[in-house]
Length: 223
Image (cartoon, rainbow, N blue to C red; front, side):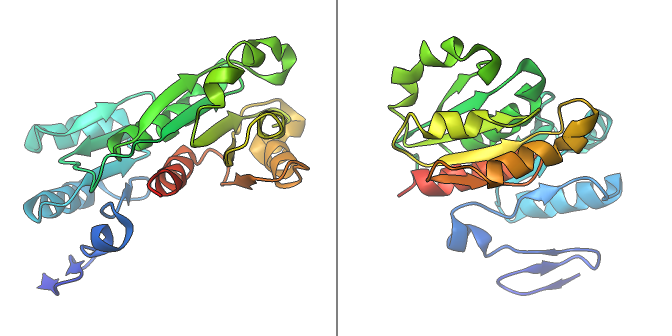
């Protein structure tokens, strides 16, 4: 195992141990495609170097395997996030609201919400308020307007992000989900709707990328 001051070479991975200085949070580990043994080694090295440990798309069975040798590891099964040793560089004072269009979108919304919480943000959740019953959103719009940034998670046609953006003054991060029937094309329809939003102030992350939305919202909220 070779080492430098700014990264750690494990052979199968080069851990960026300088990232927290640059970005405010350590390198986050995407679990899919990695073996259990690789993940265990990565987490052990990060903890040894006193780095934050955040694992995304972590399968429950793999978490159980890691927990045997890393007892401090915690798990959010809905968000599929594992974490331990996370100490944000600074607690953020601004509010971030995470909104889901439907109940089926909640796992992706929870990935965003849990990421935000782990990174030291103050958040509120507002779930199942999609455009098929817009009065559900309107009953809480005053709360949403107090936010510093809003994450909107929606599948199907993905229209909720534009609607929310048109009602508030802060940035909106739109997350398309793969929820929907055949012509939703596993989230592509929602992605295209969000990319074509006519409301200024909407940015879009990839399909089902709750983590990416939460991370970006945290960067905005630290300003």
